[in-house]
Length: 138
Image (cartoon, rainbow, N blue to C red; front, side):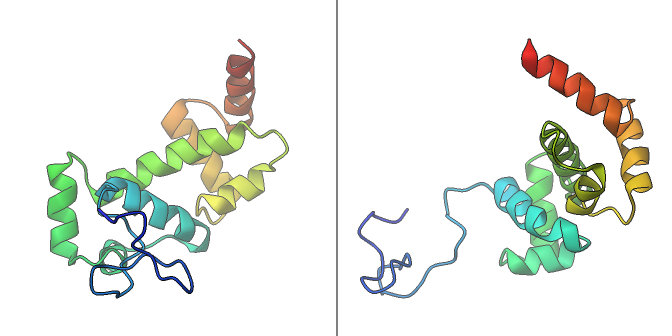
């Protein structure tokens, strides 16, 4: 773990003991957290294939799969859980249009998002939004 003073004095970028910039991913940040952060950035543009995500994380595709298996999950399951969690988060914002939510989650069309919502939660996006808003008021 980096000491608080281990930063470039000019730009504030974290550096290692040799003064070289370190990867933006903290060693203490878990693989799934790092992967979800990366996926969230790329979902609106269609997401990432596992080999691209692995490369961006500094891993081989095989290492990513093995490490995710050790965490009890897979790449596809991680993407699915992230989309479900983000769908709920975005639906809690009643000002956010459903088409925008569909786009942010990487769906080609709002109808695809609606289909996924029904599969995941047994409710349409509007029904789920109302449910989440009512729950938040309790």
